[in-house]
Length: 474
Image (cartoon, rainbow, N blue to C red):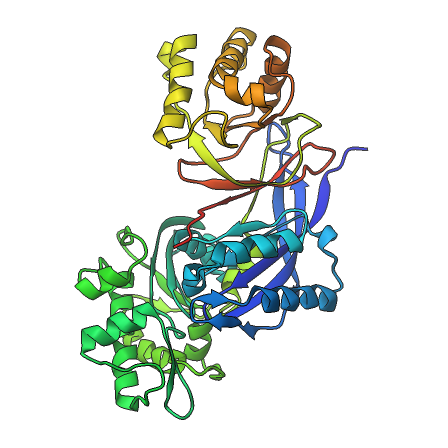
């Protein structure tokens, strides 16, 4: 019997500058009867477990304690009554200053390998901004109310900003502003100074070191400076030298208006009255930001989720679903992780073999890739019509441009914006020497610079879970 609905289990893991935690979500996939291909879409997201929140454990100021983190998350699985083999999708997000630690990549890989069949190990300021806006509820509210909302997620090490219109992200940005950048104990002694805090102190002419006692006045000056540069970004564009030094991305691209502002993240918990349990400047920063919000051009609305915005976004909103007409070699081993996307454009008025091969080769050169050395995903928005002569022409251009991959048995991944993946796969197998190691997916929207993870196929290999992300380790 044909399956029209499917429940899958997702995990979101956030290793942040201040805290680490996870959530489990249940995602309901349902066939869209209005779609020509009756593709599956995510109809419902339900959080089924919100884990404990711990301080991100450090071995020293440059190294996160992987063993402690791993043990903590294994214990969380047991508390939730969930086995890693039950997880079908999700994301590990290493955020803020944690992404700068020297073992950040190893953390993401270790956690993703332990967490289930398909967990994306990701970190990147624009990606964080996107999923925080989704996890906080700002994106859904923007879509429901038809508003343009600026979402600002202020964590321990970074502030991730997104502008959303009708549920769609228009622009993202990120700056090193957070409550954990300067650690100060209850006795007034400094126990942590991250590089952005050092920049701010240098800017203010302060020369404190770890172990020094710092006055309340200096703490307020540092927090006020962080607040000032953050508001430079969210009211934009940021022009001061200090703000540009602290920014991890470009400035925001602003629409003609902002209808509403929304603050999430750990610092936002303190802005909205939460208690301060951390030996850092989070509370002072939160208080200062509250003094600045009346200057904004629109109202500030408290979001549904604050400190958990990123982890909820990672677990429930990072997933895309391929179209239903895919082609897969049964011998392929899933998941595929951290696959770079290379977009290929054809001139529809010049569809000949030489042109198509040259454009594919140009895509490899543009990304400094050597064909046959690594697994990549070629993305074609609408390369050819679904006629046999054009599909055969496309198939032969793929064969000619992937000689090394075919010879070495490297998986070849082709992704399309339109509904032609099944036809392409069958014609390639029939008309070329590429008889194995082929995966074709369709009805996805990708861009140059994206990275993707592809999970094990669902619904009898009809559809594939795909996480589209930015993968940036500082």
